[in-house]
Length: 181
Length: 334
Image 1 (cartoon, rainbow over the protein chains, first blue to last red):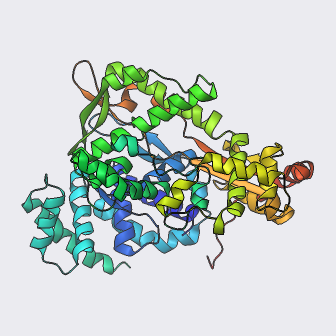
Image 2 (image 1 turned 120 degrees about the horizontal axis):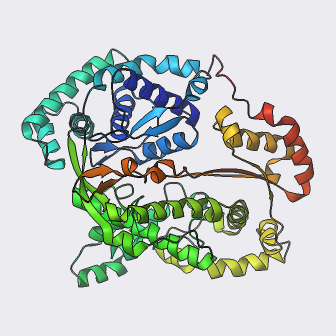
Image 3 (image 1 turned 135 degrees about the horizontal axis):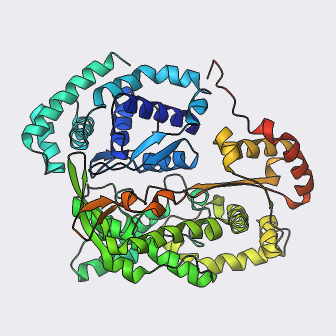
């Protein structure tokens, strides 16, 4: 997928998250993009590593900054305790209109991710995204307990109960997402 | 040790065309890792009772060190070296380069800045993580660091004439190096330095039969390609890839050998960090500083043309620019 099409997908994801009530800080966008790419095999080409809040892509972070330079996104400071949001700028709508096929092709995937993760906080997103990361790293068929234990090894501040719940939820999300592929 | 070794893998002339002059899968960070892990260096690490990976991990940070995960403290320590906001690498090169280039706008009060750096808990939507932040008293020093970065990038590092010399140097190296790439085997890599290349470049500039004659003479005789187009907000608003469109159209019109392009966009988001106020509240830097909210993102796109064609190219650009940069609607088959 070329850069402009990728930007259209990210813009649409941010718009949909925002519309459905997400505060759209960079961590939310990172995790939502991770789910979009990994659950639906979208060829966005971002490389995610396990970082402070779970899977994180430095390339995506650079891309979001580039989108600000290209006047597609702007940063909007939020009052405490929230960090800044990233919001589409006015010109982004006409930019998106040049890519009707890309928007149409990925719309149901974007809607799925926006609906599933619109109201999740950063800690919850971290648990779920790490659960997906571990599931892909180990084996989707690995037992919930084994994967949960791995999560707590990687992220010691996550309790085993929280990790088990995250693994169970991500398994359900994977199953439901197959229907939207 | 990690800070000292952070840049040891750089090629001659540092960042100039690193991407094009190393084989697929290689970059200077990978060379840094190779050097830190080399047998010679292992002896040093053994002497001071640390392992090569202790150093390597912090020297290149989580983006490039993939062999094990980083805990919060390792993340903080590597941020102190490589971080976008307050990395010591950045502080060092801004100050050093502004000194040696003779420009004042790269300077800032690094004593005050370092003195007020703190590890702070960043609270975000139910999550807490330790990150590098600053005391409120150091906020103006942080502003001046980030402004220094902006000015150094736009006025010095990415000045169009400085960049075209990088491009001519890359073209020379592409022709001069065996197979067009630097060596990645350590001993061979360490044999070539700036001086080796300058000597060969001036030799090639005087001898039409040598590889790299044309780009070498452009550098030696200052006959560099001229700036034909650069990104501007009006065109970017119409097409974020306007410079790419101009580059491709210019290649079609004047031939690929007569046109060069260059682009860079700032990486990461270094303007947002926690600040501890005088009454012990932890707030976002963007809440406290209008300056940081408004520091522009560095973004550069250039198209250069052979100076012999400059007049014709300018005329062509003037007549065709609006058609060239028009963002085309996606076709049905795309």
